[in-house]
Length: 58
Image 1 (cartoon, rainbow, N blue to C red):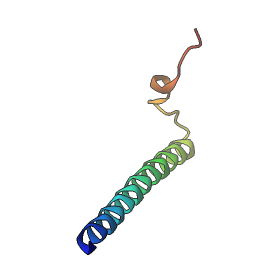
Image 2: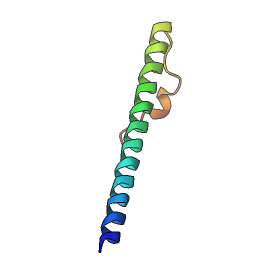
Image 3: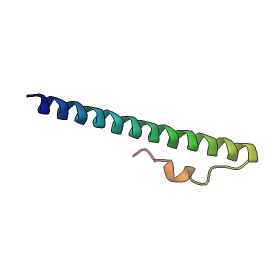
């Protein structure tokens, strides 16, 4: 009876840890993009990747 309970708790902890890693990774990517954008703005440059992110309304 206790083995399934322990395995369930271990699986829950692993799932929560994976979720935290994914969220932190997304946050790091956003932070890096903002830093890159700020660095380019300080240099007076436009973002060369910006046209690739633009989408025309159809």
